[in-house]
Length: 173
Image (cartoon, rainbow, N blue to C red; front, side, top):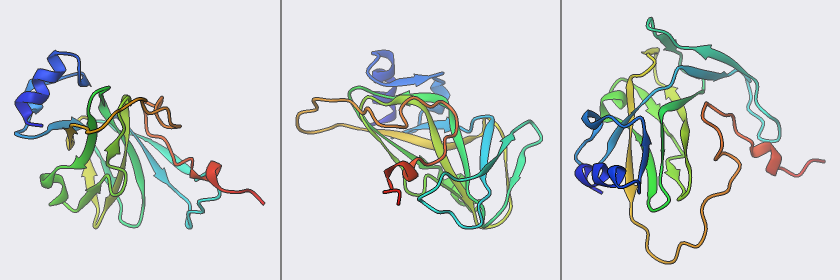
């Protein structure tokens, strides 16, 4: 979808972006911002059968330096989603050129999800991040075929960074 069409669909309430800032529209996407809180995963070995441990970090105007070999979870400032289009969240090339990887594996948002999205952040060398920085972009895609149901998964109601709940899917012995 083009940027002008994204704006049109926001105005027609078919795409949900709150708050919406017209200047964040790109030719084919919308820039979203980094929220004020990070979770730094502290486990030396991440075991998918167990809930991870983490430190909560509050971002301020001084920023925060992310370190290599650590996984950080952040969130978007904006609530983003749609009952009509698939969302895809990716990093911005300007941020990628700083060595910061964003949304490494979880870029797809299902129809019906409208919330602040958890972001996966990983860096190749120390890099400073700030609250409200334009860190990524979201695009919207038309669907083909019948869509009879909206996403009702385990992550849909969170508006701040949220750790994996994969451990709930593991068979406990």
